[in-house]
Image (cartoon, rainbow, N blue to C red; front, side):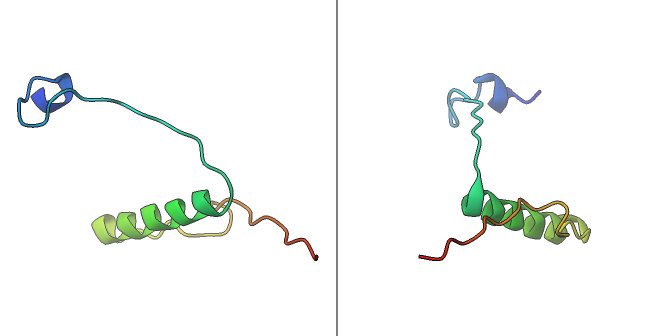
Length: 61
């Protein structure tokens, strides 16, 4: 593990590991951004409908 992750790098300071749960449109957007970045780095496509969160059904009002 690097010094920066152990809080020993004075430039970076203490490291905090944070997690959260997202749902809905925000989760879908972040997953698409991740897949785009993944493709840029690896040239491997991750986008397929089976891997993306389902879109909520629109209510008719």
